[in-house]
Length: 206
Picture 1 (cartoon, rainbow, N blue to C red):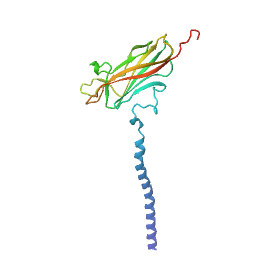
Picture 2: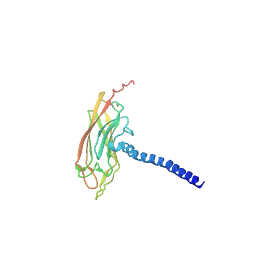
Picture 3: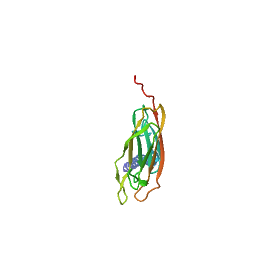
Picture 4: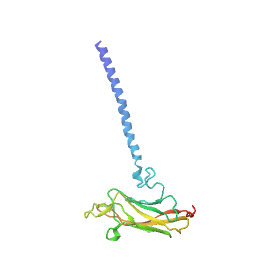
């Protein structure tokens, strides 16, 4: 009887060991497959500034983008047509990579400053100055004011009462220089262009 009992215990032990081994094997397979899933996930790291999956205030706007490794710039206006005599907001958004920064709009000397120059069609007029984003402090030794992260500039544009209906191109020339704690890249100057659709003016009777 003692021999039979030993044999049954041996069979039971082998069965328990085999039952525990299978989940362990499955876990190893799952861990080996996990990096493939994770590697495909971070789309935002491959396309900085891309907004199709995470729409924000740029949705329903005409935009043009300037993509860069350290800085991306978006020029946008509302998609809805405007009438003569109306005003609309024009927005320039900088998306600056972590650990990078650009100089402020009033930095000195002027060649180092971030510059925004509008080129408006006939009958369009900019109202007031640029609304500028809050500043931070540079990581460099003198801690001068800078923009980092996301910096949004906005300006109001008025359409003259005599502007005829049709599409109008609005251009913004953008100048900036990206720096990190140790170095500055060459200055960048680009023209971004968007289209504003002007609809016919309403008659006095409407």
